[in-house]
Image 1 (cartoon, rainbow, N blue to C red):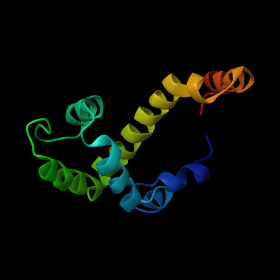
Image 2: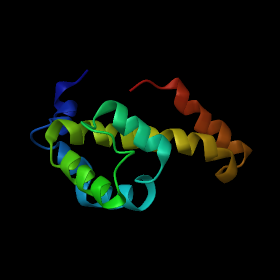
Image 3: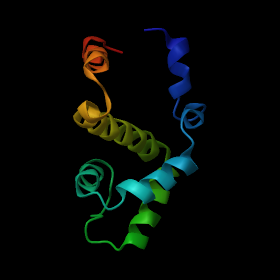
Length: 112
C-alpha cells in the first residue's frame, strides 16, 4: 500500500478535507437522524449513551459532538459511507438498467 496515498486519511491533518463535515451534519440531520437502522449502528459503535431515548434536538447535539471528536468523526464518516453504499446497492435495480446493473455488480470484484 502506498503510504503517500493514505496521507489524505491522516486523522489529525487532511482527512477532514475529504468530506465537508458541515454538509455531512446537514445530511445526517435531514435523512439519517431518525432512521432506526442507522441510529442502531451509531449506538453500537460510537455513541457513549443511547441515541434511541433522546429527542431530535439531543441527537443533533450528539452528532455535532461526534463530528468534532477526531476519532468518532472518522468512524462516523465510515459508518455513513457504508450505510449509504448498502442502501445504494439495494436500490440499484430501481435506478440502473440491465447493462449498468452488470457494471455496478463488478464493484464487488475490487478490493481497495
